Length: 512
Image (cartoon, rainbow, N blue to C red; front, side, top):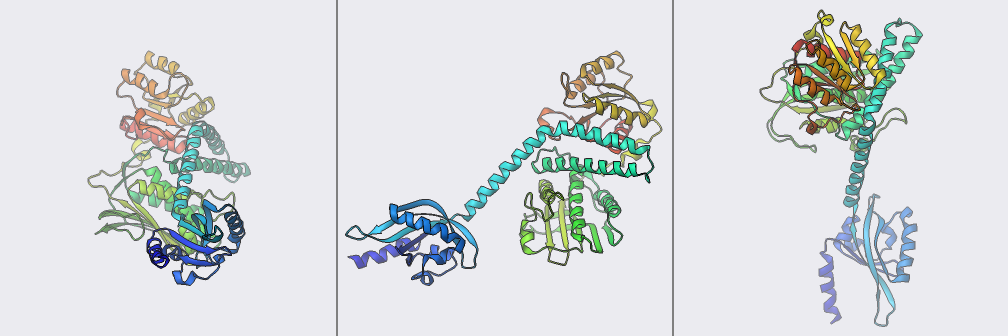
């Protein structure tokens, strides 16, 4: 009878999709099924007769010895997660449970365990924890973004104003320039966190990418040492793509900053390219598949230090960075990947140690789209500024005074208010006087959206620019209805000038 049961036992447990093993009380393996052996990198026959220490690293064995002693004392174990080691030295977790097998006299004779590799489960748990963490970071950043960007806006704006009256050779100018750079870095960090957590509104418009790529090339050239050559290879005939220009600019900036850091003290070349690319069939190659069609291909190539396989595998992980503390957040490439995927595109990298790297971004081309408007400064001109009266509303007094000074310096006449209701009263008294409303969105009492609605009742054609530091404007709140524009704080003098001139030149907006 006993001889008949053993083959049945092996047949049943041998083909199971989880591990089964039997070991003597002193730890010698007497039986393992195929799953248990293969997950450790062995054939079953290779493990029979060996000590269980072959299944664990030296570091893991200290814990295993304690578990085995407790197992023999209590008669059962688990469910319990225990560290195991593959034949190649790779450590991985297994979830196990078991019991002590007794002979006919009730004496313990062996340990019987079932176990399953939970590596994938742990990876999914880690991903979930990361998602929860990023959601919490995004919620926190979104909550403080408005006030923080108001503060940054005032700091950076007054710094710019102070710099205008000082020679560039003056040490004070150079010190203020460092203050401005620090402010820009802080503002960029908030933007990157909000972009990563998907809390920044996407504004899709037709864009000629050649403009963005060339501008990024000029910016990179001005910040690189003379030993590094910047080469642009741009096809000006590339058709428009429908994207959020600020977000694609963020992708380019992150990729170029990555190339810049890769050069370190080296001389060499950074190439930025833009070409048309046609995919005949679905592309995957280990990356998110793209349907056949027309694409814009952006490449950023450096001749820097390159990356090994380990670093490549972690490159797009959130908060992963090879930089020292204080030099970067590790968000840059994760943000770039998220933006590109959100635009239905793909980003991937080719690199090897000591041979540089090439990042490739593919963005789908939209059919039947119009070209992007010319630069706002060209469209708006400057001769008519003095004829326009702007109604400016912001409850942050320091920022209100700053923007008033900026606009006045550009030749506009400005009527400023810190209270929405007071602004409404002034407008209602002379509704035909004002040419533009520039208002903060979040204000106590009467908010910017409510104020705009009241003004549009009296002047339906009135151009409006909303200004906000929150980034996460909810489309369901109808902040922008298609005939209005939006500026995100902190706003530079150049951004303010370009937007105001474009809006006043068109007589309407199309920024939201």
